[in-house]
Length: 538
Image (cartoon, rainbow, N blue to C red; front, side):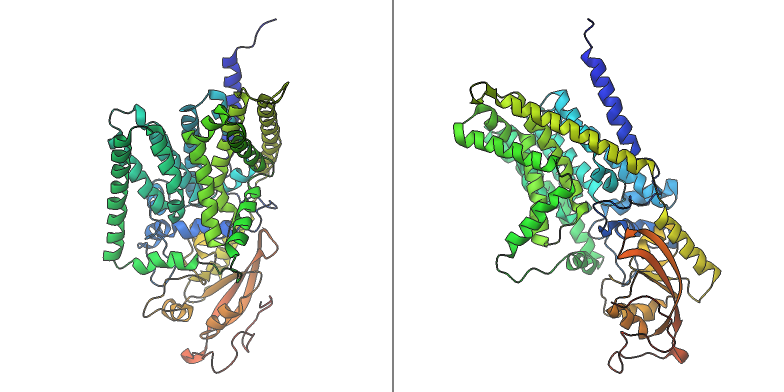
């Protein structure tokens, strides 16, 4: 009987991985898949536009900055800078922005393989990649033009350098590159600060035993980060952009429960949120970690010590723990945040299963830990097959409701002129990226001395239109009513959340003779004479 060549098996395996990877790059104009378990994540309505608005504005309107509006670029400049460069080639479009995100996803696959191959066999790396490319969770979020895919790429790049430091002729020079990458991580998403322990672990552990080299490398990396990040902060301060920098933290500060033990409640919420990634693979990763810890504590198992002291395994564990700590501190976990956790969770499954397959300990005579390792591999493979079918279903059934709604909304505005073509909307930046319609955000905006709130922003920019999802916030209605009557003129069905599946367009009619109402004089949170409002106010 002819023995099957392992090279052919690996080749077929790579073809499967490559095929699922390519699915991520298809139909980039399509909506975030509808009716997913992550239906309520608002990134699909807003974040792509928000974090790329500097690049979009610079190309379409000549300036990246709109005073009094949401300008996150001073705090997270790397992503909009890359989009700005890309748009010179592609023009401003949602598919170009998402294509950049998918390009980082492809880079993450290569970097993941290189990282796992630096410490283990090929099949371990390929198993991890299989779990990544077949994940419906990562399929959905890696196709959004959000910050997580690039943060993952920069983190994996830093890990790849760190784990190879002992083999470099000039490890201090390479540590400088790690410091630069960490600066880019912090300027991509400020939550990267919670990844610092993982980066420290993967830098120091491979150099363990050489104290002098550890000190030189860590100092080189830390000083490089301090100088480069400090340089950026100095530039932000010198340009008067610190209010915009601080505002990003202000809007991401969420209320905490009144109980003194709220961190425990928040930790459970954040920890349990890991099930958004996968209801089988995440618990499996936890079981494998517990087995390794129990093996060390219970019978000082050499294989368990090896896996727990594996730089990549430990860094992956600390990366997951760090991001969960961020969500615990914030008390507001969201599915998109777990896109970062997902990669490293899948690494833990692959490395943990590999370690068990190599274990020589027995739980009882005739039952080796290798049986558990084999069962973990089988379970992971079965999950990947099931997830692959799920992902394939999403890829084969693209929908374009939000894109269509944005096009129709813009077309309506162009066909029914109402003074200023400017639209105010929570999803405004997203609509601008799709249709090039000029917009402002009605919910966020850095307060200035002459533009402290939405009322002042409306008075300054004098928009002609406003759009909301499904219902009207009373506070926003009050702000609009100070200067406008509202006329509901059109609605467009889009996406799948029952709270946000109808985009409603209002014409803003200025009050007669430039009148300005005062909220203290009358209740402006209810429909007034001159209004035409057909949706709930709540």
